[in-house]
Image (cartoon, rainbow, N blue to C red; front, side, top):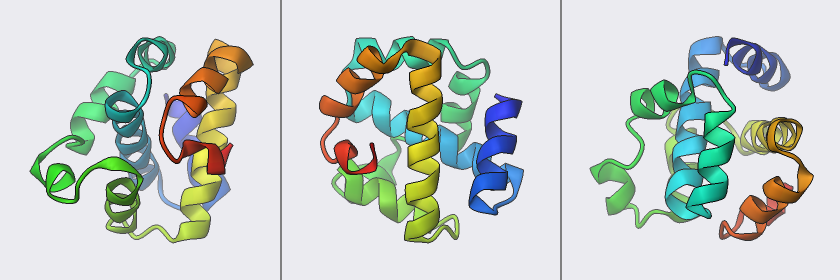
Length: 121
């Protein structure tokens, strides 16, 4: 997880605490919106991912209030001070990391099975 956090922080020009929270939020989004078995396989390949998801507070009342989905994800990430360009860069890097961990086929199934995610692939 530390390697992923450092990589995303450097790529997006953000601090590591924000990168870790961003990863937790994005993985929590994938867990709630994507194909659960495939997403869980990805989460299982990232040591510390469960803790990051829990620390992000993902899935709380705010997400439900926003209606969930990609719009709620964007709102939550912008609340961390991220701009759209940074969010897109982080999403692409996280998807690339996922492909390295679980393979392109399984990552493709996550992307195809998660509404709105294909625009970042």
